[in-house]
Image (cartoon, rainbow, N blue to C red):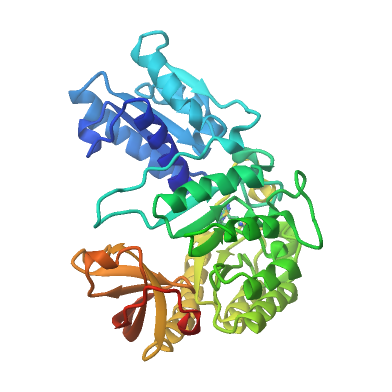
Length: 447
Ligand code: SAM
């Protein structure tokens, strides 16, 4: 989501006549978009700003330095007070005002600006895209922000305080953006929201047994030229029967689901204020696998939440084993200011968090490796995205189940759906050879 917000701000600045600098050392404006979900991310952003002040500002005193996003929102004016080199602080509902504020600073109208207010309609302001144009780097996939904010108030999470209450864009507005992207050559769209499955709950509601989110998926599915749809980040509670059933009914909806379970212990889930149980999560996974047996399932897990005992942690280990996730993002609990969990008793010592993190990682990696191994010898459909990140001489794409596949190919294949035969695996990467160049979508081979 932060990448998407940054891209939209960059596109808005480009539309106003700015151009993207190749490196921060040559830029007239350097804005750091920040995350507050864990303390480490905040410390990294502050450290980076100190570095910019020392390196860039020293040589080019007129450079404008700024913070945007969640840390800007939660710390506001304190950032200007604490870091005298910072000129601009733009909150999460004000990204679209960045160009206007830069104009004011450059024209000398204002010296320093901090705006972290609420703004009605801001959910519909993240819509501009920078799509790379040349054959080698052309954009095949895009993120589309469908809503802002979060109403879940999980006890560990700072997001409702930094992103505000849930506000959703309209279906026609989102479809319009997706249609434009498809017309510009984008083949795959990922719908984005803090809790994407809560989309339009208040504004649109349930119709004919379908949640607003499923109605949106159906509308995006109609777009000609678009070949794949994904979404992130959902909440386990959002996987109602209507969404599960959509996986069997909407061929463009990729067989990939992120189910952030957070913990395998019902006691901890209750303390986290998650609103579901371990059994509930396993039931969702079972339903999804019944409707799409090869679906790729990933998760988020927090280790060391306050009060987590060895027994609770073992329940998480056993959930990971039972659910057989394709991959998991594991986080060590990080106390966040003003969230209920930060002051809960029995905070878990750092060394226990580290140890649990490693034990869980071992289990997740072993199961993941088995899932990737099982792909060897199989034919998978990938959407070719562009040069491989590790070795730009090769190409990479993703399976419908969201696994990266690297292969030897040619530039003209970028943007195509291609069938590959997998011949080996690396760490959470597959390696393949073109089986048949497939210009039509052939779902019979889809994985
Ligand atoms: N849709 C997600 C959900 O169901 O909660 C929310 C995405 S959240 C912004 C990304 C992930 O960050 C969460 O799933 C959680 O695992 C992790 N996270 C959030 N707050 C955290 C904290 N205080 N410490 C460690 N990890 C945290």
